[in-house]
Length: 70
Image (cartoon, rainbow, N blue to C red; front, side, top):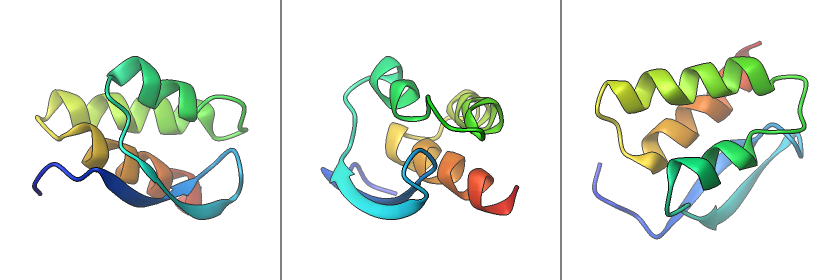
């Protein structure tokens, strides 16, 4: 997946899908996952995908999907 400036993802803090700018850093992305009962699984999923070489946008989308599946 090429770098995108905007993504549509499931925001676990808002319990809904949203369009947003792709965060510029892992810290910024991880901060989006805070404040939800799903934060631990989302954070773990995000970090796993980043270790596998996924982009920030891909990892954030996967983290949101983890919240929807839980």
